[in-house]
Image (cartoon, rainbow, N blue to C red):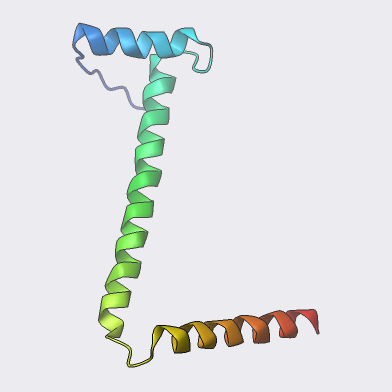
Length: 86
């Protein structure tokens, strides 16, 4: 495992130390690693949502009414449910 030294203002250092005092993290490195993991997951979720938005824009505008779209989705859902049950 690589080592990285970081500088924090006193207030931030105190915050990190307070998080480790609660027992959830064994030391400040564990806490920082958890923050980084959470940020990685968040970034992946945002990238996935952006991909879905881009796909939606690329698919164009539907000429169906909202009711027609809902009915199509409902029919697909019911067909899938019936297929799985059968």
